[in-house]
Image (cartoon, rainbow, N blue to C red):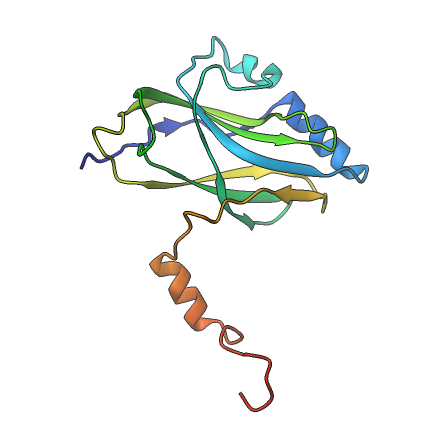
Length: 177
């Protein structure tokens, strides 16, 4: 099994479309985060990022598997990367956070790219799955929805440790227990 270096990515930038979504969410509209787009496209200039509505060249779409509210209008999205379904390998350069408002038109909310990308091999060369976190700004809106795919979710050792130290984790709500 090959190991996977996930590259060295720049900070995540909120696109113009993402800023419009944040503004709309303040007006009682919901932002729905749908998925993560991964690709091998190249940008000409960092200033080009703001006007993107999709990543430059999408090679793989992965679900969001969890979200954590951080603080001060920030959220952490978790996704997992493996190559079990990749028919053709690619140079992993782009990560795009995809979302939509009530109109349902999915657009690029946030984007980052790797100055030092890595190769994602096709499924014939299995790689270790990587858990990747993307911290994004969502503003002070409470009108945030996340489409989570829990079909491939499993507990990590830290999840079990957190559960076992939570004083409410084993309460059943039944009197006497």
